[in-house]
Length: 274
Picture 1 (tube, one colour):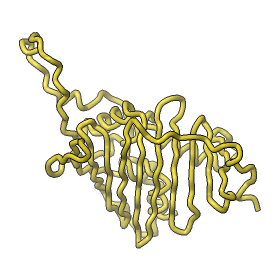
Picture 2 (tube, one colour):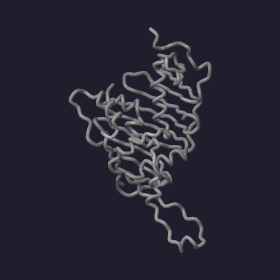
Picture 3 (cartoon, one colour):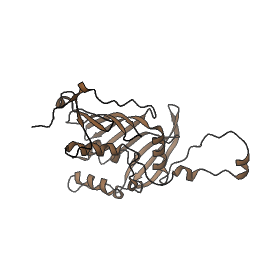
Picture 4 (cartoon, helix red, strand yellow):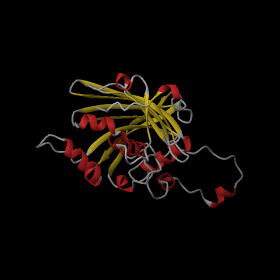
């Protein structure tokens, strides 16, 4: 599997770093909020609007994750380019409950278009003509199905409540770039987020295993995040090891619903049977 394909199949690890994973510790935003004096606190006055906080390596993950959990849902679109090949995906994520719900459409070079819906603890996969235009039902808890483990891991990656504290330590720096800009009524600040991949041993080992002999993973990886004054990510971009990617997030708190296919849309045939 090439780094390009791994980046497509593991967007949380490669594209979102740990923005979709909840890490332990208190919310960093509170550490930088000035404490009012006793005399000011005693005065009766309207509750002020919360001031936006400049994100740092200490509060970046916590601030973003808390905002995502509070919003509970979002739509996204991603495009990735490598060596002239273009891949894309779009979909919706709903968090909370016993398991997150996900609707995902994927287009990758030299592969059939793929649609995935995961809801109610079940995952449904359509591979276009390969599955007769229908969905194949996959139970992530069925250990006898080789597809189950992969989809179970994919759902963990979009669940921000999975505690992957090790990824928090991988952030080297978070630096604001330029002045904030207002887009669609939301003030956005761009941040340069630098990550040390060696501090994520499992992800590092997987990436190194896919690289051609003699190719080394850079000591640091840099991502550009556009974050609103509400703590929600609107865009993530990067250009790493020949892979260029842009991922946009919209409709926070009002994502498109995720619905399971109807009985007529589900195939009982194994598309991989010889």
